[in-house]
Image (cartoon, rainbow, N blue to C red; front, side, top):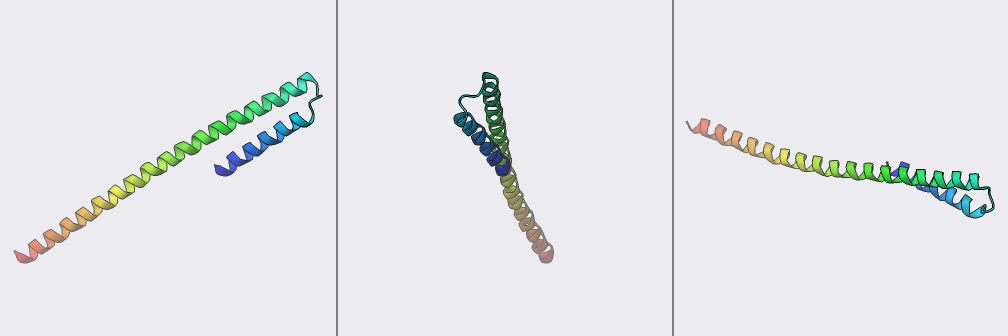
Length: 89
């Protein structure tokens, strides 16, 4: 996703440079380039939002894994207590 974001930003920059280098283009050409820049900007924002959502999901999943590790340790500890209790009985 980072690569996609970088590619879109580069694409936007190239189009913006074209607009600056060729200011004498016809109104249709300028409008088309401006629309392209806006579309690329929207795509960048969407990709950034997706990246943010993925990062948030990663944090949540890591928290769940940590909690599962804690739960497993507790269960294993209880199993040892029961095993010792069985030996003593």
